[in-house]
Image (cartoon, rainbow, N blue to C red; front, side):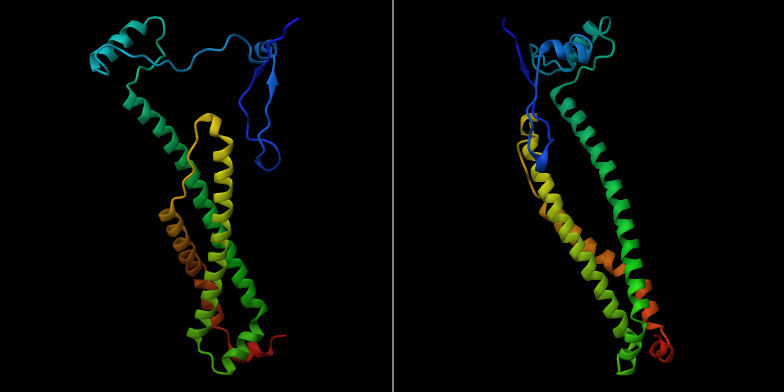
Length: 218
């Protein structure tokens, strides 16, 4: 008895992004999917090329039996696909913005705690001649270093996962992996700016410590 077996596309699952091929019998697909698979896209070549008259003629012919079908030219189809990608990127950028806000709050909390724990040391630095401006500058640079290191680690992990996903989706048509260096540089610059903003309150608090009270702190 012969048995036909269908090989489904590889999915991005498994350890360290390894693709796991899955073999499924047609009867199993029919039972699990619930019926005959339907086409979601049809490509049509018309006489005269892509014209408005041909597009309207196809719409008119399909309106009765298939009222939910959209008839698009090549340019319209490309724009529709680009719009879907842009929507996904908009959601992703919103999530990244929230992550950036959380990261800034984390840096503020870390520096504030660091200033509190080093109260005596900061008082001693003021006694030996460090000015308030120098204290603020020291805390500010600490914040910038933390933010830049976090940004570099995040970029490295993001590039690694981007490359892994591109490799995993080659069978789906994703064949190019490109690193947007301009956006990467902007991201690093944004990390430095976020570090400066996060250090505003901790640096101000460190520079306003009373020297005698700071020295007496245990």
